[in-house]
Image (cartoon, rainbow, N blue to C red):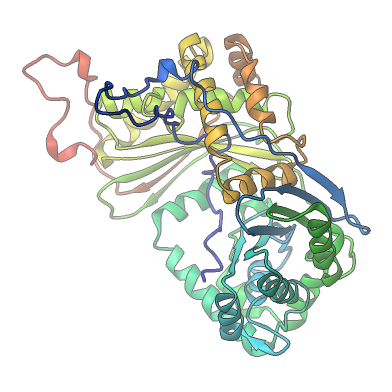
Amino acid sequence: MNKFTGLTLCLLLNGLQGCLAFADTEPQASAATPSPRLQSLAELDENAATSRTLKIHGWKSPVGGKVLFIRTPELPMFDLHVSFPAGSLRDGAHPGLAAATFSLLNEGVPGKDLSAITETFDGLGAKFDMKIKQDRASLSLRSLTAIEQRDPALQLFTQILGQPLLSHDALVNVKSELIEILKTQQQNPELQISQAMNELLVPGHPYAQPVFGTEKSVTALSREQVQAFHRQAYSAADVLITLVGDLTQEQAQAISLQVVNALPTAVEMPALPATLRRQGDAPSRHIERALSQTQIMLGQLGVERQHPDYTALTVGHMVFGGQKVSSRLMTELRERRGLTYVVQLKNTLWQGGSAAAISLKTSPSFSEGAVQQVQSMYRDYLQTGPTQQELDDTLRQLRSNAALNSASNSQILARLVDINQHSLPLDLDFSVEQAQGLTVAQVKDALNRHFDPDQWSVVTVGPTVEQQPLPLPADDVPQSMCRAETGIVAS
């Protein structure tokens, strides 16, 4: 198992964005009937996929932990997700403390080391996973609901949460592992650019610190610090529990109580500084690397998840730079100019705020021109807003995604975790339904209230080379000309 697969070092969360949905096909035709035809995007309104009717149950534990549960009886299994405010934001003066504590959780419990823990879950047919990012640390369990598998899997899971050994020998190994990860990250341009962007957007804030800390700080960590962090950050009062699966509400309540009872008692968490907007000109940074393509990121702070304009901003940015090939950025930079293979604008939610980031790779000789082109396009976009057709297509995409994203327990769980963590209304389709009432004017106004075309911070990673003018758009190029020489067009 990889403890660090969920690490979020960059500003690349999808938010409401997702893949375009496919329309349902008709039943298979007999030999005497015509073949079914594919449905076009324009026909999705008439044959719209419908979401499953799923009721969310919510309650609080006796000590304050919050629980959300959806019953899905189709398969004899359940998914349990448990998260804590135990990400790198809580490192304080000891960068890497949260990551070290997190990594030690499954290194040993009474009677079992890491190998035995893994073998036990495998023998029960259970799946155990761990993820850490800046805001939170989470652990999840997927198990069969039969008592023979469920009870021992839950017992081991709650031991990992509440009774980790946090031994000195295991800490020595974990610190070596973290230092190796830090060294590897220094060679990864995508992680480099994300870390640099965080430092530009919120200088001096815990969000600007590396999730895994620094080599010097990690080396100095002690077992006593780790034990104290576990007691404070993994407490019963701050836990968020999310359950989906073939369970009755009584069984779900019993499981949540089992989790809560295994955790340390409440310890007051220190307050965190707010993510304030930077004043003055937007800073930029270039990181020199001998790469065949230059990695580019433009970033700007946004609003918190509960803000009334959040949905309008998300929809507006889907039009401008979402995952669709028809987004404005993809149309201009890829289809018309051949500058890049993919360019996207994604949103990362932070505690008390968010950050939007535009990411692409292009030929080093076009890097400055590409940045200027993106900034110019965004300035024009704020002046006009999306077209009615762009808005209609995006809202249709959201409706289709909502239906597809309730097909499996894992998809439902992911949506329910988002509701739990951001204290949203207890409705899986709340955000989608909220978006359906948006107008072009509302989206345009929201974008102009919170984003400034001149406040995009820019980070580039690549070589310093002589710059060239951007290729002309395809529809502006004479028939005898290519958009750009083969050797300099991004692959």
